Image 1 (tube, rainbow, N blue to C red):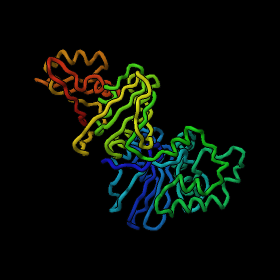
Image 2 (spheres, helix red, strand yellow):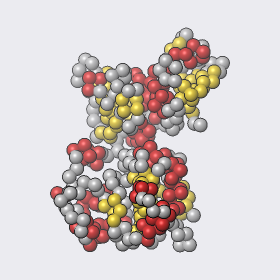
Image 3 (cartoon, one colour):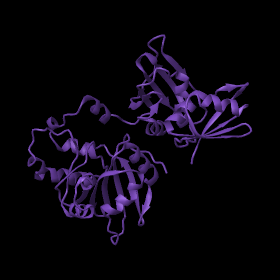
Image 4 (cartoon, helix red, strand yellow):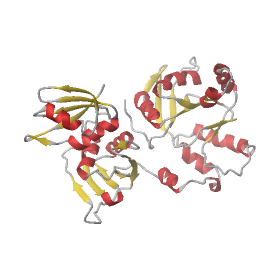
Length: 361
């Protein structure tokens, strides 16, 4: 299932579990079994506060966190409900704090001791959460275990808006938040229907950008500044922009990995003759979005055999099934599927425009 996150995708997930029965002992092992099916887990940290339990799950890879959140957000846990946000934390460092339980699976896997005994020993310890990896290196380890830190964690757990990073930034001196300028930009992002996409491959055209990004919502404007390898895309709604950003951020698009940022809403204007500027009109805000997939259905194909040969000039297909006027493709990756969408969406062949549909497994 899909629910919008308040923050950009992150490999650390914040879990909010409401109304768990008192007879159910939530522990790290339960969460590990629940989430590990989506990818390797680095760390898990559980907080318990009355009727609401909060936990952090840190995955080894970002794509694992995105998939886990997509599948588990809003799911039922022993009669309670689990809401999952992408955390704003950049690092989950387990030390000593009261009323919390954590496990570092990276340490457990690299240690020569029996893994079960290691995990159990970590679970029984009191744990401390270091909410940022940008703390000054001049501080001593002892300074990190001060009573002030315990109060910061308590404020995080008892907050109503569960804005983890904001609480942390307000609680500690600013001179120990030595963020890189690029990190500061990320932290200052607010969800918007305007996206800024950078690092486009030189082969990309404005039409190819439209073909890909229009799969996730109604586009109002595109400004493609090819000389700067960037584009601004304005969606009809914020939700459509959020969906596109979640699916396409950091994905390989031809020979470059694109990065996507939310931008404050503003007027888009070309600044050079090389810029491509396009405006689109839609009668409705409704849009039926399909998840990004390596499975594609191409319809309105007059000569499936000829088109299938052209397709494989751009990306090798894992499986091709030819219909009367259609082609069902299974690509080796989502990145390969994006190549086909970019090139062949609305491709006119023998006076017929082809249509590409994202299909699920």
